[in-house]
Image (cartoon, rainbow, N blue to C red; front, side, top):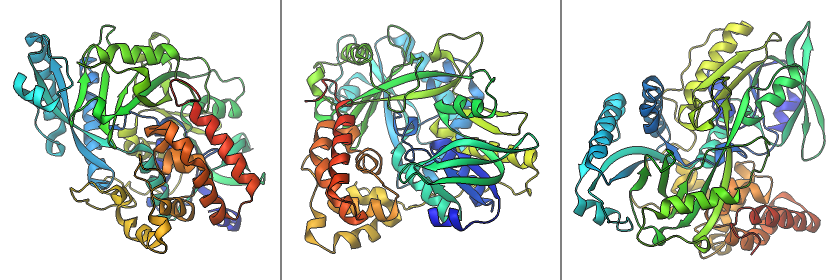
Length: 517
């Protein structure tokens, strides 16, 4: 990718700043239309919010309660495209709403029937009432006192960071150039109009001046930083909200169905979702003033989730049961009339400045494709690019493959699985697990360096695999082996190895509820 950037001697049609869900989706859309496309990400792909979601591809049941039917309908349509275009990463997940009051049960059932109706031909399954006996069988961990039954519905689930990596690969497959660890440090202008960017390689310090016909700001919670780079007097438009998730072993909370608590005592929604043989529990919605690249869970957020989920469980989840805690920041667009971030819109906004910098922000993973379509349509209109129709509704994402029902670990690589297995088969050692408590093998380290632009131990343990998110303590234990394997493949010295180990151990400590243990 760096070679293609350096060899290029023509202005890019589209330069995208930001390598999260929105930026990567925009790059795929632009490249697939035939535009000369460059994406620059200052850290790693999906380093921020886009790797820290609840892992759901969903319409948003709670938005029906808010009356935002159009948002739900759009998201449900996009959910259908996602599961068709990336079946190796997106799957149907059943959800159970426990019913402790018959009146509320009917209310939920009617709402979910509307949810089914809005899904149309892209429905993942019908919603239905579940008897008390059946819900006890399906979710034996649920507290049975006053339980009347349940309402079952269907939504999608995915691996967010793996999807992001596959989007970067799809962009490259279509001729685009996605580059991680390339920080945009300034905007270039001619006659007051943005016509490129200044950027610095975060790994070797090399600086670039890059010309482009259109520049798109897709930096999520860092949106204001780029807007104020364009216009220092611009007011901020992002109100960040922090959400955290706790990860526990599946045995502690046994259920094949996800659990959705639609209304906690303070009016929030709580999920407990089976994912990669663990259970993810979340989330919070906490307004924050400081935007950090590595947000950390607050003590009160951890206690909030434990207190609320334990109200619905027979056996209590203790702090010592938590394998990992991760935090992410939502880029919510400010409203002068809204002060509670849980009520701010998850819909997206596109803004064109007087300099013709195009900014897209807000939204959520499920609607990434529609957001990308909308912003490239806007770029065509604003920058007079050749008109090309969007073709991503049915565009297969890199790795597309219908997986079997065996749930084998390497199936998440989709059509790349056979190529990875060739690396694995070169040496018996490469088929060894990195740790007995996680499924990852050594060959995956080699693959991630050669084919997925993994540049650091964190890239591999947090996003190419999900070790850090599944078990922070175990991920620290395997960091030295990962560092040595990467160093050999990348021709790095021992000083690099030691530095990577120390950096990762420091990071992993913040993913443990009890700190560095």
